[in-house]
Each structure stands twice: as structure tokens, then as C-alpha cells.
Length: 413
Ligand SMILES: *Cc1c(COP(=O)(O)O)cnc(C)c1O
Image (tube, rainbow, N blue to C red; front, side):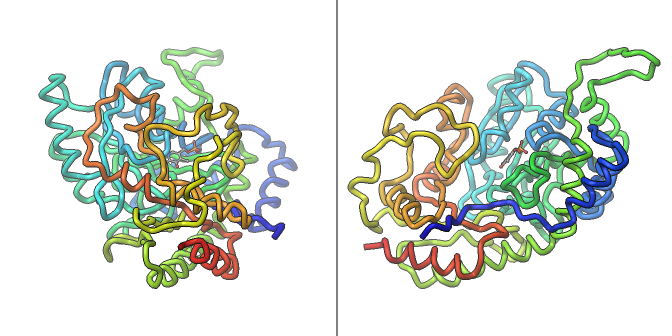
């Protein structure tokens, strides 16, 4: 085997080059221009709900600006789902604010509404103040119980910033994720549902909110013939070149969604017949995941070939070629890691040329957030120890899925 099957590689529609060429031909090689406006229009139409959209340089930048728009300042607390990628929580710390982590409910794996309410009242009791914002996440694209989260948020009058970076095109009760809260963030990084090579967007409630975000994203300039600043801004606007890629990608977003769902269906049907493996499916008819990544849980008592050597060697460099991983792990074990059978399965698949990856390690188990308050029920940690993400992107074929399923079954003993 010399072909490798990756988790979620970008796939170009062929239209991207036309938009990029136009940008060069018309000399719009800057962080504004016709592609940026066109991409924002496409996104606005796609998400619906009378929202406005600002295209930004990353999903992380979108969270950062949403927090600022919600008035988050140094010393404030912000509630964040623990079971997520670090970019959901990092911007809270950029502002000198403090994340408060909430564990997951077992059905969607996303923010547990019951724990959310408990945390809100407990923070008020302990600090005298309510948290300034709530960040639920659509992990692997799966819709959260956003209806319940929204009603709790409304009860305490706290704005919700939906992290839909992985959930672009997912729906709950037929409404696009990212349009329920005050703000919704999208990511177009290289491995997400669509890509602009790197980029993101903020879904805003109205034109005034959009204008304010745009102002912050372009260095907070006042309307004078010279540079005049009354606030600290950021250089967060998406470039017209990247937006051109985004416009090309928006011509195939529905094909991508259909493909991810199709791959999910293949896995789901196959794993129904495999003891020890549980496919993470939509928990109800109200959930309509984009299945950005298909994920499985391995039973604790299910055994995998090579399990006894699973952690024999420290990983050096990046698992699956993730960019920018330059710190060697240093130790073979941490105090919270995937079970041996999960690591053995990852290694076995890797040998066959298949990239898989453990579920995201919860933020409340990350050393960098060791002092953050956390409201925990054990679900996220349990999922992390048992789970694997499987190749799911537009470049994964039906034959690839069959090969992956066979490889998994072959390694179960
Ligand atoms: C990718 C991701 C982000 C950040 O998006 P970038 O565009 O990479 O900055 C935020 N939250 C989650 C859950 C993500 O997966």
C-alpha cells in the first residue's frame, strides 16, 4: 500500500482558480474586495435566518471578536464546552478572561445543559457575577442540545457564541447550526467542511453587529483622512485571494455535505454488526450532523492486536502530519490518554496507510487549563479514552471506507 487515506483532506471544485484569477486580473490582492463580499453573500444565503456574515482570517479570530462584541474583559468568566479543540477556549485567555469548562451529555457529546445551569448559578454564588458568554461546540459536526442551551442562556441573559467550526451545514430542528446564538463562528481551515486554505467567519445578528466586527477586524480605524484610533483593533479580515477559494468551495458545499453523510452511513451500517464498536450517530431525528468526521467508540473489554505494545514508544513529531507540532511529547504517558486498545488500533491502521486520530482531549484535562473551574460528569474523559476519528473527507471513496472497515475488523481479537 503506498496510498494514504487521510481524515479530511481539502477537495477543490475547480472553480476556485477562476475567482483567484479575477482577483489578480483586477488587482484585488488585499484583505477586502469582490471575492470577500461575494463569499460573505454566499455564506449569508447558506445560513439563512436573516443573519449577517463577516469573513475573517480564521475561526479562532471569529471567536476572539465575538467575545469582544459580547463585552468580555479581563477578569470575566466565560463558559466553554470542555470536549473541544483548544481554539474554542484560547481566545478567552487572549482577553485575560477565564474559561469555565462544562462536560458533555452522552447523546450528542456536546455541552450538558444541566451542568451548564448548575455552573451558571454556582459561578454567581462563588464570584458574585454571572459568566459573560457561553460557548457550546458542535463537535465533529454533531448538533448540541442548542434548544435547551438557548433557553438557559435566555433565563440568565447570557449571550451564546456557537462554535460551529466543525459544524458547518449541520442542523438542529432543521435550522443551520451557528444561527441560534448571538454569534456563530465558522472555520475554513484546510481540514474543515470547506476550506479557504485558512479562514473563518462570524455569523452576526444584524448589520450593526457586522459593522462593529468589521471595524475591529480592520484595526479599529476612525473616519478621518489620517489614521485615528479610539480602540485596539485586529488585523483579522480574510484576504480577497482566500475568499476566492471560498467562493469556489461554496459551489460544492452541498456535494461535500452529501458525501460526508454518505460515508457516515457506510460506517454506521458496517459497525452495527461489529461487537465492541459503537458508531456515533445522530441521537435523534432533531439532530442532523454534517458528519465532518465519523467517530467510533471502542469497548473497554474489546481487544486489539498489538495492544500490549501500544504505548511502547513516545510519539515524535506530529500524528498524521498535523502542522506545527514541534514539541516532542517527552514522555510516553500522560495522566489521561486513550485506552491501549484505541492506541493499538490507531497504530494498526497507520501501518495500513489509514490516518485515524483519538478524540479531542477535554480542556479540563489539559495541563494548560489545570486551574480553570470545571463542572464535570466524566463523559468527555470517558469518550476521549475510548474514541477514534476515522477518514471522512471528500477524498475518501466507498472503496476506502470498505478497506478501513476491513482493517478495523481484522485487528480485533
Ligand atoms: C478548527 C476549530 C476552531 C478554529 O478554527 P481555525 O479556523 O482553525 O482558527 C475552533 N473550534 C473548533 C471546535 C475547531 O475545530
